[in-house]
Image (cartoon, rainbow, N blue to C red; front, top):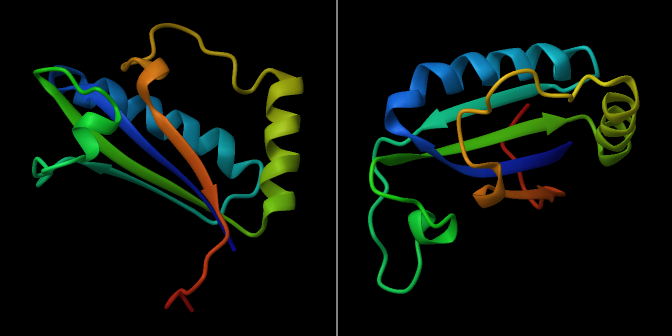
Length: 117
């Protein structure tokens, strides 16, 4: 298992546009082998004393935090999918992205422990 995670500031009024954008992305990624994608809309994101999700993405007033992760079988599958999606144009964007992509955080991780069966 290999996990790709994102933290994204999304204007609150663009929640439905983000959901549609994420669903479209999931259809593309499905064709390339992901196991699971979870898109989570902010419900409780407290302000921290030194850092927090909002500060990490320089969230602006009226933006909500999306916490998203993709589970892939392994790093090689994700790497191959990314290469293919870039070369075949799958990741080309038509229309407006419903958030400021320059402020999202992306990271990929090899799990240390999981209760997933």
